[in-house]
Image (tube, rainbow, N blue to C red; front, side):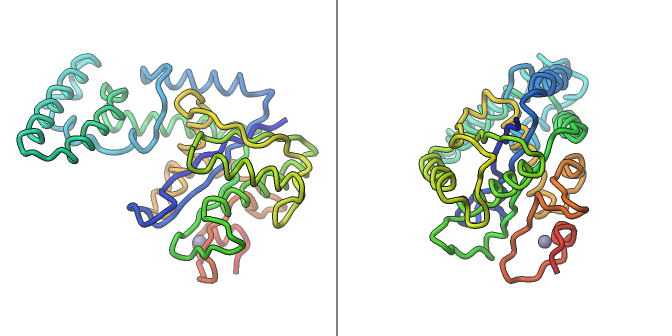
Amino acid sequence: MYILYVDESGVEEGSGGTDHFVLLGLAIRAERWKEHDHALEAVKREFHLEGVEIHTAWMARRYVDQEKVEGLPDLDSGGRVAAAKKERAAHAGVLGIQGAPEKLKAYRRYCRATEPYLHLLRSERLDCLDRLASQIGQWDDARIFAEAVSKSDFANRRGLSLYEAAFEQVLTRFQSFLERRRATGIVVHDNNEKVATRLTHMAREFHRFGTFWKKIHNIVETPLFVDSGLTAMIQMADLAAYALRRKIENSEVDLWNRFEPRVDRSRGKLVGLRHFTGSRRCSCCICKAHGRR
Ligand SMILES: [Zn+2]
C-alpha cells in the first residue's frame, strides 16, 4: 500500500511572482511510514524544530530584520530570538507611525509565520531543508510524481482549471506506477478549501470513468484532506514542490537534486514528472529526460 502526499508550489492564478505552478505527489509505502517519520523528526530535533511545521517558503527566505542584529551568529538560541524580536517590534512601530495599515498587517503576518525559525540563521534554515531533502532522496520506496505548468502556456481545455488538470496528471502517473507494482494507493492532500470539493468530485468521477487517460483501478477512496501544519509528509511534498519550482524558474538545482533520484522512471524514461509548456518547444533537462522532442 502506497500513500501519496500532494502539495503545490506557486500560485495558480495571475503572476503572483511565479511563472510556474507545480503540483507534486510524494509516495511512500505505508509500511515504512513510521520509520520515515522518525527520520524526519530526528533531523528536525537537530535544528530544535520538534513539532514545528516545516514551511519551506517561509524558512528559505531572507529575514532582513533578523540580519540587522549585530553579532547574531554568536548569540545562543534565546538571545537570537530576543534580539530579532526587538528589531521586529521597532520596525512594526515605524510602520505604525507611518500610518501604513496594510503594510503593517503583512509585516505582522510574516513575523508570525517566521517566528518558529528565528533561532536559526538563514544558512542553518537552508541546511535543515537540505538535510530533510537528502533524507527523502535516500528512501528507496519513495516516488515522486509531479506536473510543472508554465502558466502562460496553459489553455483551459475540457473545462479543467490549471489545478484540476495538474491533479489529473499526477493521479494518472501514480496509477501507472501502482499498476507496475501491482499495489494499492491512497491520496492525502494538503487541505485547500478552494479546491477540496472539486477534487473530491473529480476523484469520484475518475473512479467511475477513469481519468482522460486511464482507469484508476489501483487507487482507493477520494483524497483525504489534512492540515499541513500537523502532517509532516505533506510538509515534505511542499518542500519537494518548492525545490522543483525553484529549479525551473531560478535554476537553483541543489535542493531539487536531492529529490531527483526519487522521480518515477520506467524503462529509463522519467515518467513521473512533466514540464508542461503547451505547444511551445522546451529543451530543458526535464523535457529531455521525459523524452519530449
Ligand atoms: Zn522544459
